[in-house]
Amino acid sequence: GAGVSQSPSNKVTEKGKDVELRCDPISGHTALYWYRQSLGQGLEFLIYFQGNSAPDKSGLPSDRFSAERTGGSVSTLTIQRTQQEDSAVYLCASSPLRTPSSEAFFGQGTRLTVV
Amino acid sequence: GDSVTQMEGPVTLSEEAFLTINCTYTATGYPSLFWYVQYPGEGLQLLLKATKADDKGSNKGFEATYRKETTSFHLEKGSVQVSDSAVYFCALSDREGNYQLIWGAGTKLIIKP
Image (cartoon, rainbow over all chains, first blue to last red; front, side):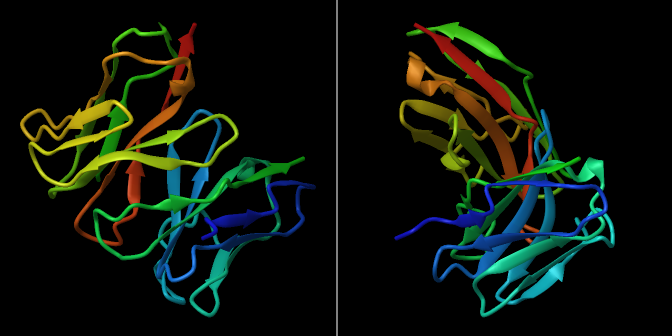
């Protein structure tokens, strides 16, 4: 079946604008993760969903960041009043099970550039 | 907190050379360990994993052994190919919390023909 799909693949926005990033996980995967990858750095955990609930929001860098997941499927990550330091690649991953050894399946990411 | 440290890149090798990319970790529990690879223009994908001490993960000629005594999970391949050029990430997933992955910074591997 289809893999994890993210849209848009690229987004250029002006500082101060709001952006929405979308993630469509693999059908049936209950766990969904958002990560951020800044240039030359590893991935930074942002938020985790189990079904529609997000028990851990501790990775969100500020209150300008929010995320939701509906129907146990599609998730959107919203960044309000974007800043230049928000420029990064935002990656979504899903897993069929919530276990420490589960493989995470990644989308190709959304490259966000704030100008 | 938990962390992963991997060797800085880029690593440049000739085709058929032996590859080692070092990875060490710090974790309070007994994590699962992973190597993910990102080929140019593609998304991250799992290369191999190991879930307990002394386990060896292997795939596509790559191997890594979970060494609890040295808290290491070094990636090795006996003879690299140009098609192995990619960025390699070491990661761990602790048995506590949400099982999110904790990542190393990535190592870019360049293989020259």
